Image (cartoon, rainbow, N blue to C red; front, side, top):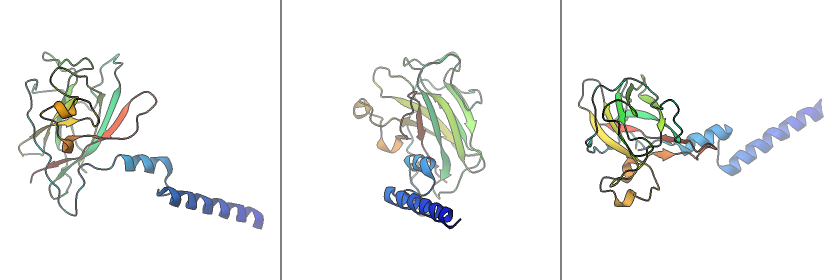
Length: 203
C-alpha cells in the first residue's frame, strides 16, 4: 500500500515539475490553446482603446439573416472559427451586442443579390460571441479581410474590418492596421483556423 501511494505521489510530482518547466498551468493542452488565443486588444487595468473604425466598403447589404454560421452547404474552403468578446472602453462586457458580418467567398466574390457569407448574431450576457465561416479569398487591390458592424443596444454602430496576420498583401493595403489583426491558434490538420478578436466600443 505504501509503495502504491509513493508511486502516485511521485507521479504527481513529475507532472508538477513538467508543467513548471513548460511555464504552463496543470490544465494541459486546453490551457496552452487558450493562451494562444489571448484577448486582443488587452484591457490595461480598467480601460482599453476603442477598436479603430474603417469603411464599410461598397458591398454592405442591410437585413442579413440571423445565424452564427455562414458556412454554405457543400463548401470546401478552409473553415474559420472566430470567437471573442464585445466590451466597453471601461472593459465592461456589452451584453446582447449586435455583430453583422459580411465577406467575399473563397474566390474573392461578394454575393450582392443574396446573403451568401452574410449574417448577424448577438453576443451573450457576458459579451461573448462565436462565429463560424470560411477563410475569405482575395480580390484585386485588397488583402484578406472580414467586414463587421458591431453595435451596443441603443448606440451607434462601429463599422470596421478584421485582417489576417502574415498575409503578403497586408503591407500594400492602405486600410490594413496591425490593431485589427485576428489572433490565431495553430492550424488544425484540415487547415481550419481558430482565431480571436475582442471588440472595444466607445461609451
